[in-house]
Every structure is written in structure tokens, then in C-alpha cells.
Image 1 (cartoon, rainbow, N blue to C red):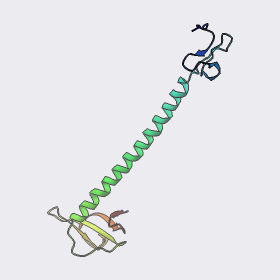
Image 2 (image 1 turned 90 degrees about the horizontal axis):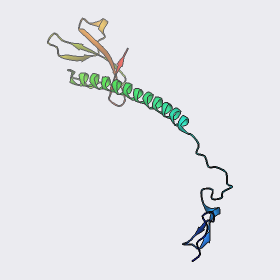
Image 3 (image 1 turned 135 degrees about the vertical axis):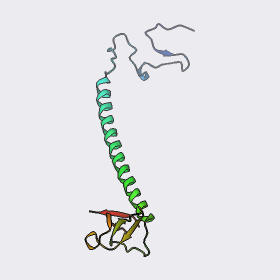
Image 4 (image 1 turned 30 degrees about the vertical axis):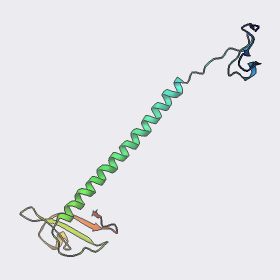
Length: 132
């Protein structure tokens, strides 16, 4: 078998010249292959992505705290004493007795002398929402 010179691109397995199918230049006169420097792009993209993820994380954290507050208030109301079925959309008021037990009432704070905590409205999902 004749050995071809180094500058001749010949595939021994295929028994064919394959210079035009190579992903790189194989000729002495071919232009120099230079890799693009993408470090600037990477650094900018990393910074942007980190800011975006940090912002989303803070949104989720804020939403989590809001959800936990809603959970705590709902737990407080459902543990309070009341002997009626609340009506969806109606405003109820949460009060605290001297013995630290709580009760739910239709009476507004200006209509009674109880120790007022907060006012709530029951939504269609049976979740209590704070009324300002």
C-alpha cells in the first residue's frame, strides 16, 4: 500500500479522499481557524440569568410568606368558637376573650366592646381573607 504525504487527506478505511467533508481546513494554504471568544457573552448572560432567577426567587419567597400568613389566619379562625355556618362573602369579626380563646362574630367592633383582632370574609373556596 502506498503511503500518501501528510498534506493529502485520504481515508484509509473508506479508500477515498475526504478533504471537503472534514470540519476543519486540511490544506496548507487554508485560512487559519480561530475560535471565537465567547467569555464576554457568557459573563453577561450569567449575570442576566442570575438577576432573573434571584428576582423570581424573591417573588416566590414573598408569595410563600403571604400564603403562610393566610394559613395562620385561617387556622386561627377555624380554631375559634362559632356555632353557625358562615355565609360566603359576608364579613365576620374575630375577637379574643380574657382567657385567650377566640370567637367569630357578626357584630362589628363599633357595635360591641369585645377585644377585636381582625375582620375577615369567607371566599368561595372556603378560605378566609382579611378585610381592611
